[in-house]
Amino acid sequence: MEIVMPAQTETVNKLQEALESTYSCFLITHYCHWNVEGENFASLHSLFNEQYNELFAAIDEIAERIRALGAYPFQSGYSDIVKILQTPPVGKAGPMLKALVELNQKTVTSLQAVKNAAQEAGDDETVDIMIARITAHQKAMWMLKSSMG
Ligand SMILES: [Fe+2]
Image 1 (tube, rainbow, N blue to C red):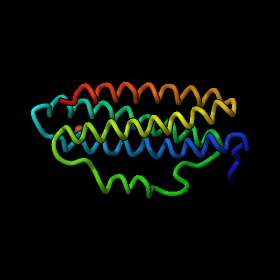
Image 2: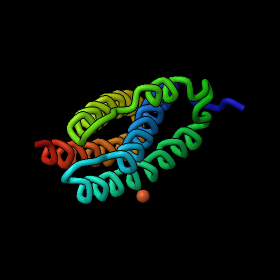
Image 3: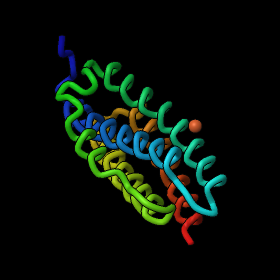
């Protein structure tokens, strides 16, 4: 049963988008962990490993925040994630790093939208989760950018 408070509807809608974006970021990071090739293989394989583990935990936290607010994650299915998976980054490390920076940035944008909606609704707890998530993605982007040749 839907028990979302009216003031929190926007927060939940934005959380759904942030969950989708975080999930995509996780799946592509995992893909890159398996498929990266080149002279920096060992360090990138390990960096991607660290990042997809962090993202996996984040997916759970965001989905459970949606439940705590009375809504259900992925109510409208996984179609947008499937779309992203149809065009995974191929080739050497360069295109993968570029794609991952873009996905992380896209996720930060969706997390910021959640933060704004939650601030508007006075939901400090969701704001707190978003601040931690944005910080994590900013750190990930620093590491990805610093790994580019
Ligand atoms: Fe592995």
